[in-house]
Length: 364
Image (cartoon, rainbow, N blue to C red; front, side, top):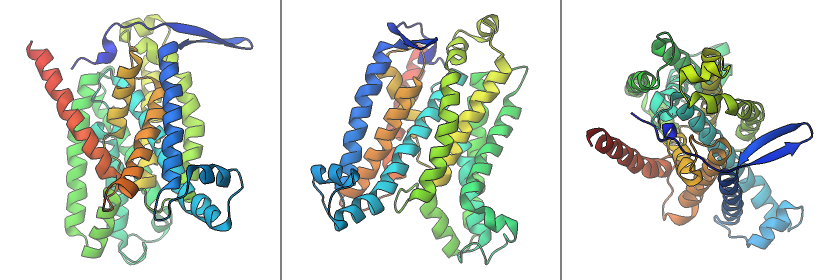
């Protein structure tokens, strides 16, 4: 499949100098990021203002700055702000992970959702839920230190283990994007089957607990989920920015990238591990939010008109999508739904459209 990232496109870039360092910043991508930040700020304000008790936007801003009465401070700062923060961070992590994997593989289908990384994290989490029992990881087969590891780290281990297996199976004197996607789809199917088998074998209470987590929900998420996400983004987002030059070179093909001095295999492994780390931590926090990492980078690419999914714009638009999904589930819909179902409802039609469009191009 030919990626739009491989098409020859050019966009005007302006020099940015900070002391002795300088960068070329694509003007259109920068403008999209700035507009996206404005939209994200508006969605965050609406998310904090609406719920069982509606608070005017002006009072929300005053409360965040330390004002407001005791009731508003409790609702905004204690109840809603942690969940909204988790939504922003999860969206940014998934958007960045998708931009990295799609650029790395030069294929719009190569997102953590499609490659099975999300399914690996889900299988790890479900295994802990099912094997531990419904009474708080203490009544089932999982005992001792594994009980203390808990669900988040099990999801992280599942995602990282899937990525290692994907890399090893895809390796054949290098990584080919087409082969990576095909093996990822196979791994995804196998891991989905494993998760289904665990649910079939589980007690009904365990299966119900696992099914709630598998739908991907932001409900009742707090600072205990937000803090690991902050640390992950603080470490991996700057690393992703440092890899931008190498990612640009990878768009020219493997031989050209080597000619420009890029250590190809080391760069590919570093990009893949960065993306998997971001996706796994995001999934461990809220469960799988399907298609966010798949759709957002492609939307950002079309808005910016660049040669590959933009890193910063993908992070900002990812935050917009997840906060918007949280707002829809809590305020717009007359009944409560997990945010993962909303993102899936957006992403599934896009996947079908992308497959039909690619098929038409191939048969033209």
